[in-house]
Image (tube, rainbow, N blue to C red):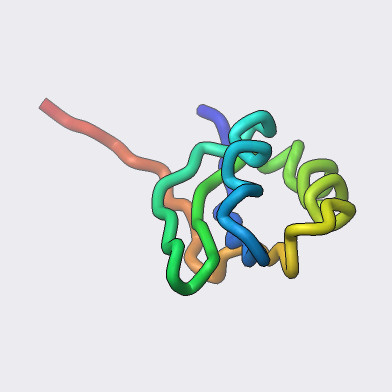
Length: 76
């Protein structure tokens, strides 16, 4: 099972969404009026992705989500 961590990215312009899709981020929600998006990344790659995103000019802030990603168990 892959451990995942939630991520919240605040951006200045909607143009950055196309470049964010190049990173290994699984986007779950995009709010274009509030200019933020939520998603999740692999836990071991979180620090690297956060560092690379903070270097982009159109990204205001990158935070980890306060909600813990629980393991999902599907039983028959």
